[in-house]
Length: 132
Image (cartoon, rainbow, N blue to C red; front, top):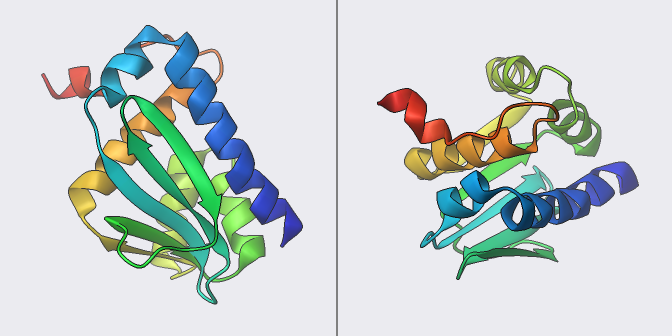
């Protein structure tokens, strides 16, 4: 469970660094306001607030997130979130019901676009460019 909690805390720091150091990422989040959470089925997790060009997080859960990623347990959450092939792990987690996504699916897709900026060695880009 500690690895899962640490990973969620570290995710905040990585997102903050990407927003600060990658102009494409800063542009991607500009003007976005969002509250989402990542948790286990039993309620252990962290919620994230994206507003005013910044992202912050707090331990625990909130009542009205725009979306929630809920993992079967902390071990599954850690495994899926830290997988090298994150897209495949995410889809496998959904298929096996180790991951339940609830809330606004459009915001989930936006978040997945944001995580593209965390991929090491990838060219800085705007994931929305792929849609054009």
